[in-house]
Length: 187
Image (cartoon, rainbow, N blue to C red; front, side, top):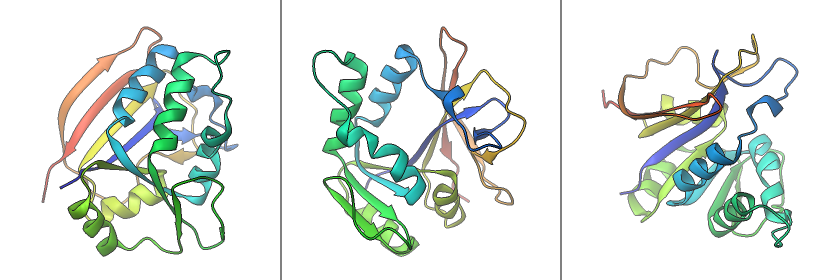
């Protein structure tokens, strides 16, 4: 059975983007990006909403020639080799290979996908992850906390949902980013 994991970079005060919708402050350096590559390498399917997909689809077309750094080439290859499921009521066609558009997030379908998948599944974006958390589907949480406080914006975790966690791992990076890895404790 595959695990459903949620991996996000967030400000120290818990936001994935600030009040203006910007997230440039979260761009990882090479050390953190290489670490993220290793975290997502086992993922066979990425679940994301339309906005997250529109951000991530850049990896489909980024130049992967020798002039591009190795970490970027590696992540592009990882992204391109995985399946993607995009949940959107407005998106009609995918801009990437190996991509399916679904009009709604159906917890039963995700449970079946977990049961039938040989590789782990990632869920991207706080709204979609919030639905998975509320449905009791999330298995693990990977947060990379960037050393900045943005004062508000889009929270990395949903409000109003109790989520007991067990710390599995942590790591501190040279630039001040801190990684924490939790297992969701079943109710």
